[in-house]
Length: 410
Image (cartoon, rainbow, N blue to C red; front, side, top):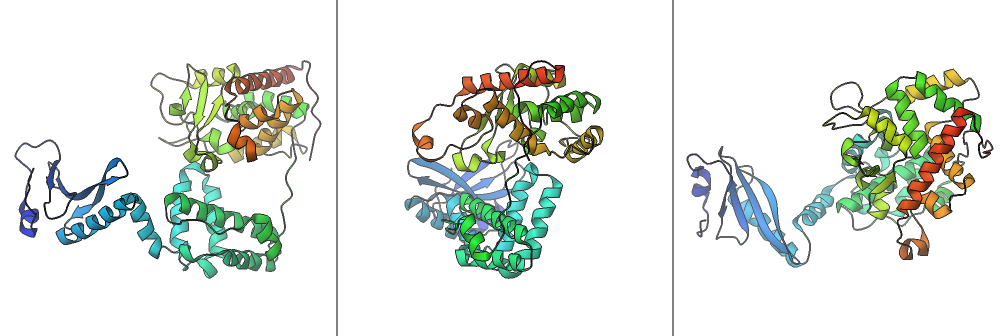
């Protein structure tokens, strides 16, 4: 490895050794930590090695000649100085991006990050909502300058147009994006604003919490109808009913998340709704009824989506169609939604005598207050037993056996 300071002419003319099969790394004695990485094909990339705390980190600066030797040294010095203050190169990059990042740019990045986990229609709604209500007042504003008063103004403006419920959703979307920016290191914190306070200040209308659960007859009829809706649609609905997980969590289930031997499904925190609040994956023990569905779909070497849709590498995308077919088959009284399956399972666990802490963990709700701090028991055995009891209960309903009464709520 060279010990001399690099020069412009050396960087420009250096070539890979004949027959090279691996990247070569050349140190620059003119800047501590700076490296020029040379690929077997002649590609040149700048990198820097820094120590953050006790960890040695290599960070890619960029390709040559887009980044010159002098610019690479300047950036390397900045990374080294940042590391001495305990900040990683990624954190410095994020802070520097945030210096000039506008709300519109940040939201576009946020949407791209969310795109794999959301339906195309949901993405379109989010984009339209921000385009119609937020971009005019905030689109060109730097995200680091957005304050609580700005949120009140935006939400109030939407409410003043008569879109009182939409105003509530605008607030949720903006706050979700700002929290994502905080996680990415673009912000040191988000405005201290609670939904109910901003809603009150802006005159936005609170959305009434939906309380609909399926009756015993509806559960039985839905379960039995899944057999006539096709394997893909039927399995999607059965997995929703049996696991109580959210629509897109089931729709986007990957074989890599499922341990067939342990009968366990681990949903990564990156695509789990409450993952950002706990920094933990969500584990779902799988009942024999769920395992039966998965074994039927499993093929040796299976990869990608469990519910694979049309086209290579695409997930099932027929959730809306599944509900239309169910409603048509069940008649006018079938006014429930896919999310109501989740509420039905949670209510059913209580009716079956499952304790509240276990039932809440089954559906992935985050413990609050002192419980979250002091009770670290994962209740995995209890969760498994609860989901097995629920699956057996659904089977009894479908077969017309003895059941636990569940009143219909709206």
